[in-house]
Image (tube, rainbow, N blue to C red; front, top):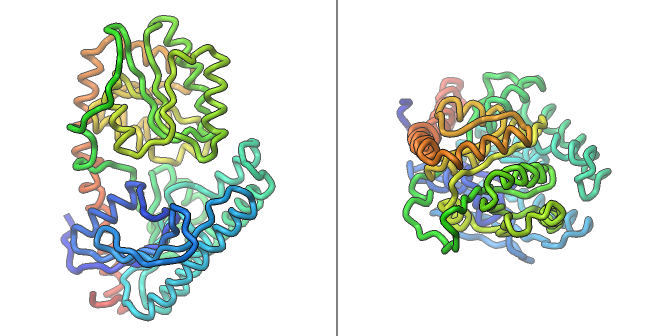
Length: 420
C-alpha cells in the first residue's frame, strides 16, 4: 500500500448540500479522510431553508454554509443557483488565508472554472469529482419529456457539457469518476485516461445496519418481501418494477414489494402510485416515501430479496449503484439487470442474479430466489463478504488517498507543491 508522507489540506466545493449525506462525501471525506489526519474546509449550500450564510463545524471541519431558496418555481430555482454561486466565491478569500494542497470541486461547473483560477493563485492542485453525468442527464431528460422545463434543461445541458469537457476537465490536475464505464465515457470525450481514477460507491461497515432494530411488520408465514431502496425519479422508469411484480404475484400472491424512497418532485412518486393503482397493486406495493438512510436500511433488513433495476440508458450505465452494495452489505440476495457495474459486482461476488432488462426475466429471477431461501441466504453471505473485502469505505479511501499523495509527489518533483 502507498504510505502517507504528509497530511493533506483540502478546500472542498460540492453540489452536496449541508449537512452532506451522500456517503461519497459524508463517509469517504467526512469520516475516512478526516480520520487519517487530513484537513478539509467545505463550501456548501444549506439544505434547509436559510436566508443568511453562516459558518459551521461539521465532522471536525469548518464549513461555509450558503443561503438558499427552497422555492420550486423557475425564478426560485434560478435564485437558489445564484446564491450557491455567490457562496462558492468564498474560495478566493479562503485561499488568501490558507495554503491548500487541493481545491476539489464536485459536480459543479462554473465553480470548477473558478477553482482553476484559485488553484493557480494558491499554487494548489485542482481536482474534479464527477459522480453523475449531469450535462448528459439534462439533455436526456429534456428529450425524453421528463424534465420540468425541457428547453431550459436542454440548453443547460449543452452549456455545461461544453464547460465540463472543454474547460474544467482539461484544466484539472486529476479527475475522479464514479465507475469504469464513466471513465470510458470521459475518455471518449478527449480527456486523457492517465488523469482519471474511478471510485465506485461503497458503504461504511460501521454505519451499515447489522444490529439496529427493524420496524415491526405484520406478515403471515407465506408472505415474502421484496425491497427496492433508492430514488423514485421518473428517469429511473420504475413502472418497470411494478409490471414485474404483477408477474411475481401470479405465482406468489402473498408477496409484498416495498418501494423505499422518494423522488425529487412529488409527481415522481405520485406517478408510480397511480400506476400501481392501475395495475391493481394497492394491497401488494407499499410506498414508504423519502426516508433517512438508516430508516431505509431498517426496512431492507426484513427483505427476502432486494432488487436493483436500472433502465438501460447511457446516463445510468455510467453510475455506480449504491443500493446494490448496501443490499449486499446487509447480507441480502439481489436481483439486478445487466448494467456495467452491476454485472461486474455480481459476477465477482456471486451474490445474486443478473438478468436482461426484461420484465419476464426479472420476475423469474425474483421468484427463483423467493422459492429457494437456502440458496438466497448463501448469496447474501457471499455478498456481505465481498463488500467487506472490496467495497467498504476504508478500502476505497486507500485508493483515493493514494491518488492524492501521488499527485503531491508529482508536484514536489516539479517544485509546485506545499510542504504541508
